[in-house]
Amino acid sequence: MNYELREMLPGDEKRILEIFQQGIDSGIATFETQVPTAEVWNMEFFNDCRWVLENENNEVVGWCGLKLISKRDCYKGVAEVSIYLDNKYQGLGLGSILLKKMVLDSENHGFWTLQASIFSENEASIKFHHKNGFRTVGIRKKIAKLNGVWKDVILLEKRSEIIS
Image (cartoon, rainbow, N blue to C red; front, side, top):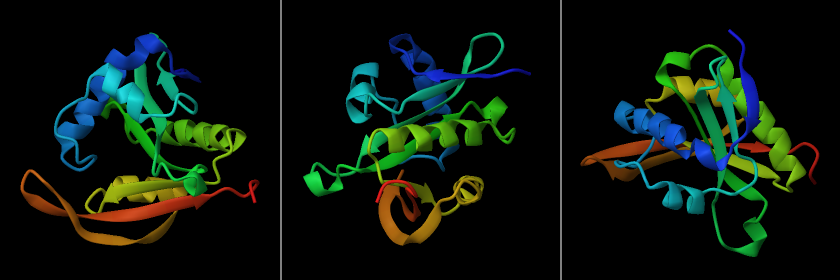
């Protein structure tokens, strides 16, 4: 099957949020319990460094984007990674295509550190990030509850090799 990597367009929100719903439904991808509106989603993510992967039928099967981690100026080059694939397309190596492009794009936009917060039980995502150059910073024990259950989160980061 052929896939096309392209910048996210305004009409992609519906499909992006459908894929995000799958992440919510998994119970191991996000603390969110409801899909936000397209407007709220757009306000949370940077306008730059948004990418989608389409299959040969021009259907979006995965997406990635960056979120602000702090409003403080000293952290303007640090962002949180979000990357989601439709359940039917996981495990095919497609996430690496998205993430590698986002890393390159993030460096072109001045980001020096990307971070990811992943539930400790989401072993596939942790391995995926390690495989793509992220390192484990630590474990945030019982950082928050999801549906009344405390969750541990693994904090990972990738430091740019070209931005000093």
